[in-house]
Image 1 (spheres, rainbow, N blue to C red):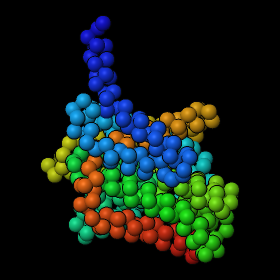
Image 2: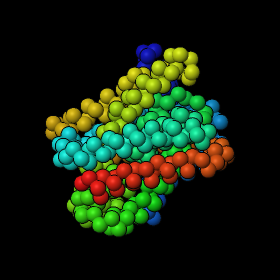
Image 3: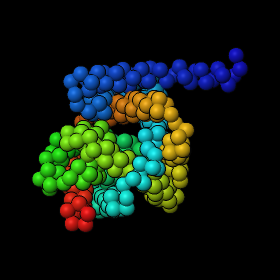
Image 4: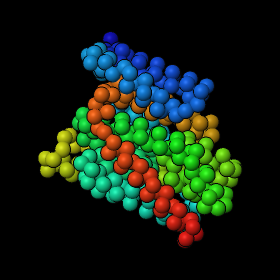
Length: 336
């Protein structure tokens, strides 16, 4: 056997002890979500936290790191297969401009408020992106280009817990709020798609009202997902520039490869290259990769260290969430 093949085989074998546990957690989280309801990502995260002690085992660590880094990036890249440029164009300029303003302002608010709360700019940028774009998926995408420090890994896990919980609560509360605001089906879809964090909860909330609301909500939400590309690229540039003057750890790439893959899939899907069956398959693979990655991140993180972070992170995410609601409510009730 050639030496290169032998080296690859040995490396692959070294991953299996740490890869098997996140895969098993993914299966358990999927079973609970499908049979008893609740967010699959949150189940995976909580199960992962319970197995933190295995991260101290040298045999398990390489596979856990592989899941938390490589599978995470693959999962984010494959999200692009869900989006087409035609879907985005159907919305018109009003909702698109409002979404851009909401994302940019929420991230700026997060960075400013995090400094005031003593949480650090990096955590504010992470929370702002997660709340304003696509919840846990955005948090994981931003985490992939953040400087790798123990604090940032704990912040990522806490952000995932927070936005998942807030998104689930919003799925129940926001349809009621849309009725209080007397929004029509289209307006309600814009409101739900523009303010709820995770895609699954957007779909659930929209369909609670009507099929038209659900369709509009998903399109608005998918446009917010496309904003992940420029946001992560800008944040990667920011951290890269900061590392070049010695304020942070390892340099991050200017345009991460997984974002290139994301944009390529959006373009391919827009041109009709991605068939419906392939689209569904890529969506399933993306979901599996993200659930396995969040399980691995949970294994890497000590629950005790999360508790030490206190109430300030949740207060920050709640304020950003209410900020999104205010922006879209003003647009729909005043300018639309």
